[in-house]
Length: 336
View (cartoon, helix red, strand yellow):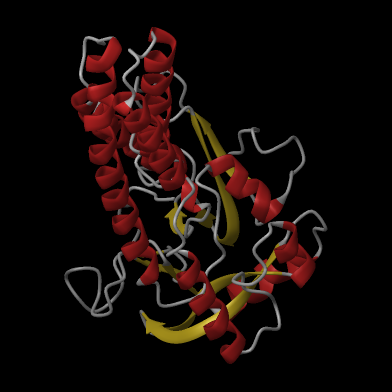
């Protein structure tokens, strides 16, 4: 989420149909060696796998290699599903989730077991629910007391409720649901008491939506932080000049980068995307995007693939991400 807004630009239609091809491919690279279907399905030719893996293997800072998945035919060429995997179990252990991270050498049965473990992990109850329950018990205890609550206790309860709301559902929802102006004494505590069940329900709904999206994943993918820079760092380490270096044509094992500070008041500050394959002017990335509406507490987010054109083209990284940033900013403003 992590979760990238939908890509809308077209590189080249997959052959054979009017709406993205008979197999639903929205994008195909100019050379025909890379194809994209949705956000979590990328396909590449055997030649692309060989070139990319040779380069990734030669970069010690890079944690991943690429596995061939299900074959398909696109525009008369055999392509295989792109499945990023960690080079070794040690690389997966380093991110603290080896039980459900794909590793080079895993057989199909191992991948199936790990995907099931990942899906089970999505059902774990985030610790914020326990914090909400503890706060509710404390508020009820203060209200049940015959002693008039002091302002320090009331302020503390309200501030804790606000902190939890900002962390779980965002400031927009909090502003619409937390009574304002602030009241004191028992009235202030009653406001917090009324607010907490609403917050718990809103958070549970948000988690359910995110979990449903991820449990429907049909392949085991590397999980990424809900942060684009941290995601790129996990995959490719620190390239020469760093991740925050602008590259006109990043090679495999490098990254795209754009500074978006000031481009949209409620948008992203920047974006990073690790390049895992390249076909001429087109780059295939595996990436994540920070999303205030995502459930950060889950600690996981399926990454997404994107296919970008050459610098300054209408489907370039800058153009596509700039448009997505504006769309995300509009959504953020709407929630505020």
